[in-house]
Amino acid sequence: MVWLLKKRLEKQLQSPPLNLDKQSPVPHRGLILLVSRPEPCKAAIEFHSPVLERCWLICSQASLSTAKELKEELTQLRIADPIVVNDVYDPIEFFQKVKGI
Image (cartoon, rainbow, N blue to C red):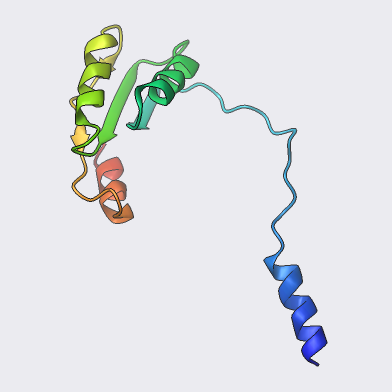
């Protein structure tokens, strides 16, 4: 009985197989960006740039300066003022900020 239970648990805990043939995401006209380092933020904006019209920057107090720099550099886009999250470990706060957009 224990052996059967162990086998069932092992089967449930196995991660699903990776599908490496997945298609890349489609560029969007609007982008909600969680600001971290400048390089990944710029890469995301560049990926969507063929159709990107509007961008929202959600950041912490620590990444607020990066968000302001991005807004100043990317004048061709309509970028709203950075939205500051008080607690970066609170997913509910992130959800509320995104929902507000």
